[in-house]
Length: 502
Ligand SMILES: Cc1cc2nc3c(=O)[nH]c(=O)nc-3n(C[C@H](O)[C@H](O)[C@H](O)COP(=O)(O)O)c2cc1C
Image 1 (cartoon, protein in one colour):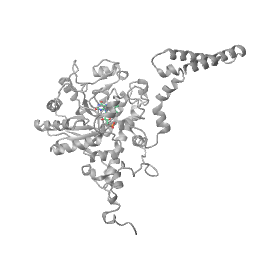
Image 2 (cartoon, rainbow, N blue to C red):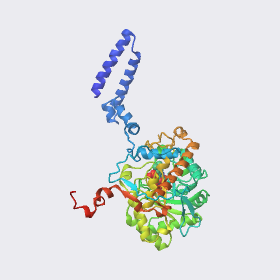
Image 3 (tube, rainbow, N blue to C red):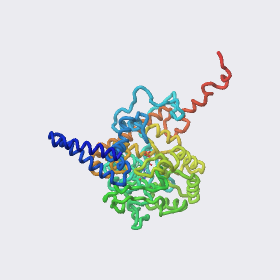
Image 4 (tube, protein in one colour):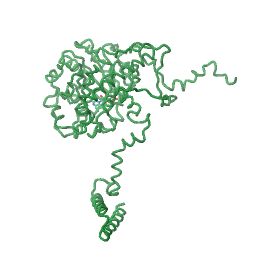
C-alpha cells in the first residue's frame, strides 16, 4: 500500500504542480498534496504503528473511527433495548426522572416478554394505597451509639479523582436536598463532599484522608475527619465488584496537583491503591479494626464493602464476628457487574460474583448464623429503576446504592471515557474546560429529582404488588419468564395432559 500511496501521491502532486505553473490554478491542491506526502513519508518511516506504516494516510481513518465508535454505536446503531452496560431505555428513564419530566412510555413494552430472562412483578388484584413518604431505614447495630436513618436509595462510592469537582459538589448538594447519603469513594473526604449532604466516608487500602507518611492507617487523622458532622457512617472498602482483588486505579492523566495534595501522593503518576489492607491481614484483625474505627469515630455506624469471591472467607468473617461478639453495622455487597473509573479488563469481565447470587448468599448466610438482625445489608449493582430496587430487596437487601444511576442524573452519556480524562459531559474528568460544562445548580436539582422520582416509582410498584411495607417484599412477588414457558403444566394441568382431541 505504501508503494501505491507514493506512486499515486507523487503523480498527483506533479500534475497539480504543473497545472499551477502553466495555468496558475490549484495552489491550494499543491499545498495539500505536499502536506499529505510529507505526513505519509513520516508515517512510513516510523516504527510504532503498523497500520500507519502500511497505509500512511488512510490509516488515520481507522484511528478516527475507533475514537468515535462509541458515539456512532450510540447515535446510529443502538436500539432502545441495546447498549452496554446500560441500555438506552435504562439511561432514558434516569434522564427523565432527573429532569422531573414524565417517564411514561407509549404503546407498550419493547421487551420480548416470552424470553426466559424476562422478569416481572406479580401484581395484586387489590393494590395497596401508594405511600407518598419516601422510605427510610435505621442503620446501627448493638455497638453503635450514633445510628443513622438512611434513605432506601443513596449515592454509591465514587471518588473525587474519578469524578470531577463539579460532579462531586452537585451530588452532595442533591443529597442534601433529598436527605440521602453520598459515599465519598476511596479517594478521601474533600471539601467538595462537605456541601451539606450526609456523607459515608469510605476508607480504602490507600487510607486517603487518614494515612501517615508511610501510607499506613493513622488513627488520629481518622478520628479528626470522622468527627465531622456531615460524616454519618464509615465504610471500609475490602473490594469492589468491577475489580475485586485489584485495588484502586487513578490514571496519571487524572492525578492532578490538587488531587495529589488531597491524597498525599505524587501528582501526574498512575496511583494504584494496593489490593490489600495494611491495618489488618486476617478475619480476626478485620473485625478488631471495625471495632476500632467505631470507637475512634465515637460510635458512628461502621461497615465494610465487598464483592463476594470465595464464599468460605465470608463465612469465616461472620464466624469471627460471632466469636468476638462484634458486628459491623452494615455490609455493602457489590456485584461483579459494578462500575469503575478504571479497571483492567480481565478484572472487570472475569473476577467476582455477580450481584444476584452474591446478595442472596450474604443474606442467607447472615440468617443461617442468626446475625441478620444485627447488620443492615446495603447493595449496589446496576440499580437504576424502581424495579431494580424491589428486586434487590427481594434478594435480601435493606438499602440500595447507585453509582452510575447518579452519574446519568448528572448528564453522563455512557461515553465510556472515565479512564482517559476526556469525559465529554464533565462528570468523570479533571479537565477544567470539560468540567465547566457541568453546571452545579442545574445538576444538583437533577440528582435530587432522580432520587425522589425513583423512590416514588418504587412506592408505586410496591403498592401494585399489594404491599404496604418494603419489609413484606420477598422473591415470591417476582416471576421469571421461564416459569411459564417451561412449566407447561401451568397451561396444561395434569388432568388435561392425556386429552389430545376434542
Ligand atoms: C466512576 C466510578 C468510580 C467508582 N469509585 C469507587 C470507589 O472509589 N470505591 C468503591 O468502593 N466503589 C467505586 N465505584 C463502584 C460503585 O460504588 C458501585 O459499587 C458500582 O459501580 C456498582 O453500582 P452501579 O451499578 O450503580 O454503578 C465506582 C464506580 C464508578 C462508576
